[in-house]
Image 1: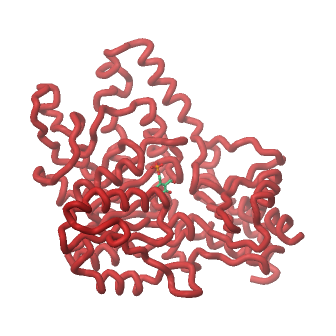
Image 2: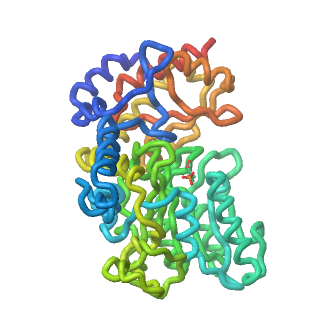
Length: 426
Ligand SMILES: Cc1ncc(COP(=O)(O)O)c(C=O)c1O
């Protein structure tokens, strides 16, 4: 749109944005500039203003009730994990008994692989993206190595890394399916990032899941960059399992409690191998303190320990915000916001120095745009930061920007394009 007055357009879009009031519910960090442009909710989401009161409530109840807070706190601690169950389920399109908030993301991936990566001597391979987040690579290689005495294959032999075609930066669904098909008798598990952390590519989760299932392959998803970003339908899409953190789009704070999904066709299978702990036991018998584990028929069965109340309070607050906004409305705004940012960047003074790695098709991306910028270095990232821009820099020259529909505006996008244009056109 050459000659478009993006500023005027942005004001008009913001004026009719039905989600615009949510911005007021978040703390924006102080920056060195007059104005903060926060575009890094894909790394650490902003703090909801209600979070402090929620943590204070638990601290007050601890001071007031001591151990009795397990039953008498405003939000009783004993079943505290249940307080987030319904909102969590709605955020990812799951049934309530299919989700649980617990541990950290990599821990959950391991716990779920204990149950769903069951390699044999013939079917042992794991499929991931070549640019999977390093922790996922480490987790999967260590699972492969753990099972090596039984399968006879080492970590390198067992891992299929999906690579884009030469000259392309993202994966084509047809190529993913082809690789799966070519290795269909030896793949035990597909475990991709729903949205790739580096390129921002959103995979076709339902198609890939179905294709894997048709070949008797377990299909799990790392949804770190998808939860709170994409309108997921984990139950309907039939995913076997998924795990995600809540410190990115879910705004629950640094190192916040992570989450897991297990499809209901597995939750009632008491025979599944798993690492057990007392909080995964059926609550009806948990406090009988018997020696034998009886898994509850829900995703809670993967819990090991009693809920970390102070850490879960921010997640409870955040999920209530998502519930009010709804994922459908957030995703609808997100598609427009990301498209608008893309156009503003393409019209900016940096356009001839920038290549966008993220797919252009809204159905193949979420809120993130990954930009390869000629001349981008740690030093220029600092210059951006000095100008009030919070974004993310990855070596050698990738800048990731993510307009979060809960708190970013169309005007933010225009301002970002303006500042980046100034920094990268000189
Ligand atoms: C895609 C992905 N997987 C795994 C992780 C690791 O998360 P954690 O440190 O919570 O285990 C991250 C962290 O950013 C991530 O983005």
